[in-house]
Image (cartoon, rainbow, N blue to C red):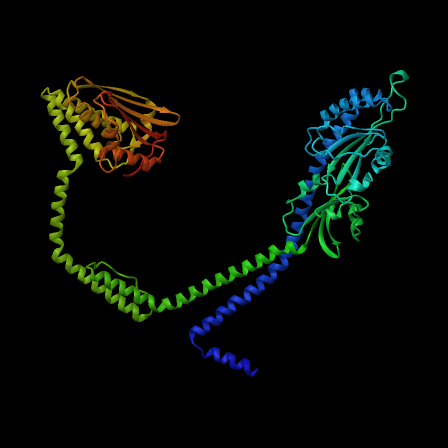
Length: 617
């Protein structure tokens, strides 16, 4: 108790900074511990239930995929067993006639290929009897030359017994060791591709005709054997479980392993205490004892084979995300509380320092001659009095400035406004319109036309928009061409071919004027024939195309390159090129084609934009 009292007394008498640090530690520790314990207990059960449902859904889906594959194989077997050609061939076989058997083998092989060769899931197919195995050379088996049934071994195998016990039904044989099934001693310790197989067998009952001359009564009913590799299951199961340490396996009613990630388990029988629960319930998810440890076990029975697909998930792997979330939330909480502490410290210190900083900024601004500055009174009483006096001082200084210099300033402003009025574009526009009217009254129609065009051009030039409708820019362009036509009277003709749809699309302002100016001034310079200028505007593959073509003197390739050069080329043309690429991207811009004596063609390409846009300059 004395130590605790001493500690409390030391904290009480410590500096403010020490008290804040201790408070911060308490704020960090207590909420994080309480929150983490509560979250872990709540999340543990929730995550476990969700994981069980997800695992069960995955097992059901994968089992449905396997059943779908085996169902297709079952349909193939049924179709083959009912094939009339096969039955006719087999009914006429004489087991003692080797030549007849080999001929029948070729014909039966073709029928086997017809039904089974296209399946990617089947490993091999044979039609077995005690005297011969048909179909060993079929395309289903051709790449597995060692996949054979030794002579005389089939009669003593479990495949034969199961097929005859089924008497026409399809019997699914769990995974077996090939060398043990057919007693092939020299393959027991050899790694072969078909070491482990699982099979579907079916005895095919041949309806022999009553006319004994048409068949040999000693011909036995054959057994169709469809073989699969254990990878039929693993190819579907691998990677489908989201947690590390999880695994799939497939067993039959007796606990015999049909598929497992570890091939050493194949054909073995598992003896887990809770295994009978799987066989009894057929499908579900539960916590079962596997290899002496509690595991999340999801299981489902195949509707085709009756085998059980089982997914085993270690609970620790499911809880790892909770632990990760726990650590992450703890760090986030610590970070938030740290920021809260920093903010609180800043607030406390700001109560003292903020008014001082505010006054310093105000004094600096006043020193620059801006006496209008005032600041809101805040802080302690002393700071509020000081701020009030500072504001009063600035008010008196501002009043003196207005009394001594206000009149002179207003006189200067009036003078500036007068000058601005003289240069007002609207004033110039109205004046030009007045001159145009006077010209019309005097009968000077041509002068009036030039002045009207110039008036529109001046009004358009001062417009601040960077993007305008093509209709506006085209109107300006026609005014410009009208004036240039008067200047070069009779020296050139001009043709327009404009798609009306383009008139309402937006374009960069003045984008065609520099191109036309180059054609008129440079293209037709000292031309020994009458110039012709053609302007075409149309849409091609969602691209707006604007072509200015002249029959002027043309340019060499070097001249074209210098023209397009940003450093020493045409200022107007480069300006148009850069503006288009800046607005629409590098896929659009200006191209120039020209040859000496053949004229010049300038093409401008922009993306199609039908909707009109307004953009301030």
